Image (cartoon, rainbow, N blue to C red; front, side, top):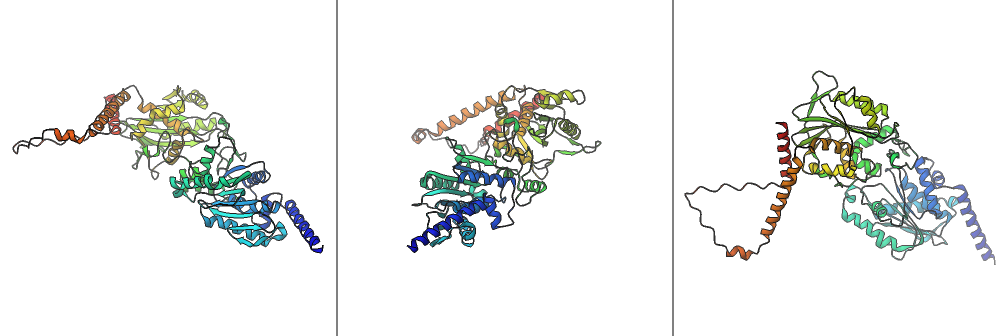
Amino acid sequence: MSSEMDAVALAADRLEGRGAAALRYPTPHDLARDLDPRVVRTPALTLLDENLIDVAEGRCKRLIWTMPPQEGKSQRVSRTFPAWVLARDPDRRIAIASYEQTTALRWGRAIRNDIKANYDKFGIRIRQDTSAAGEWEVQDHTGGVYSVGIGGALTGRPVDLLIIDDPMKGRAQAESETVRQTAWDFWTDTARTRFGPNTAVIVVLTRWHEDDLAGRLLAQDVRREWRHINVPAVADHDPEKGQTDALGREPGGYLISARGRTPTDWEHTRTDVGSRTWNSLYQGHPSPSSGNVWKRQWWRRYSTPLWSQHPTIPEAYVVRDVDQLIMTWDMAFKDTKSSDYVVGQVWARRGADVYLVDQIRKRLSFTDTVTAFQGLVARWPGATAKLVEDKANGTAVINTLKSKIPGIIAITPTESKYARANAVAPAIEAGNAFIPEKDIALFDPEELIDEAAGFPNGTHDDQVDAASQGLAYLLLDDTGAMAWIAHFRAKAEAAQAAAAEQDAEPEAAVADEEPAPEPDAESEPEPPAEPVEDAAAIRKRLRDEAFRRQQR
């Protein structure tokens, strides 16, 4: 009888201990802070806690959390949260997966050691016979933690809570279709098969690639099961499109950092890592490596500045030996700094080749937009046409400045953004569009390439709009160049088809032909055959010829 009473008393003590833990640590942050007084509370981690509590209490079964690296998300999700959950429900079977086994083991070991060293905080103990770092259970309960690398096995292990923390190690893995497929196979063939009806899943990561595990899960979420929360380093949503920031920041607001990074630190990081890495890892918006409409590899670079200091105007530039120099503007919609970006670009044309010379891209109020417009005009006095889309703040800018600045041309688009970008895509594909190398550029050229690569699915398209407008003005004119290009493209395709048909003829037909006569030793040799131009070369040559005719 006494042994039964002891067992009952022990069970009561355990329940009381877990109840006390639940009261003492209402959120994962409270537990994290007690375990390590250095832990700080930030708006992002507070929001993460709220979502983790929703997972623990069954209000959310599928959570994807993306935010910049080194901001405490993995410590909270993969270390504190499992211990916090087990203190409340020691029968919860938890699996933690990461890009490699050693990383997953590190989380399993940390959770185990936290519980071992703090019985007074958790009210639970680790079983002695199953206490390895990669697999352990709670004493007298079915719950515990199993750690596995992506590609590992979960055979025979039911899972109540699965945490997938960083399924990709870095850029090299993310760029590998094989590695991405391995992560997907782990989800479909290994992890998903271990789920019960109430299994919850958390995927926490920094984005490396648009086709990473998070990207595929969201793309195939036909039942709308996944709750995706992205916390960018700098709020970059567009209120005009109905977008909001997870933390309620205004566009351009910086993340309050768990590591104490300041706005200046964030901007230095943006400069150091480059636009593509910044947009993917720090903003959570990876762009395709090739692009959808304007592919990355189409852009050509120039390494010698086309400009020089203006001989008489301080802080101004002159561009020589070009046929045209223009400006093109895409304006924001509201007289507020919460609006989208204002983009002004300076393009030069030499023959059929166009060169992006300068660009400004900022969130500006209407007054600041007018000032920026005047400033870019003063910086490039040789720019003749100033193209402004006649909508949003553009209409007001036109009305305000048309009597003060010559050459302002109102552009009224009749087609969609996508159609306009597609219209000039052949010129970029043919190698007629140049952007400066980063070491000579007066702006960040990678921003344009990244935005173009993500178009039309990216958050912003202001640079694409401005460039489409400028390239259409410079290249899609009434000289007939495009008609000639279409004509010769058809000829090139017909020639390629004829060559393919000839190559397909049986070799026997060649054998039946009479042998060619031996060349006369005294006759002059035939000149070598002219090299055949490919389609891109034909398009470029015809553009050049058309523009030269225009200049005569």
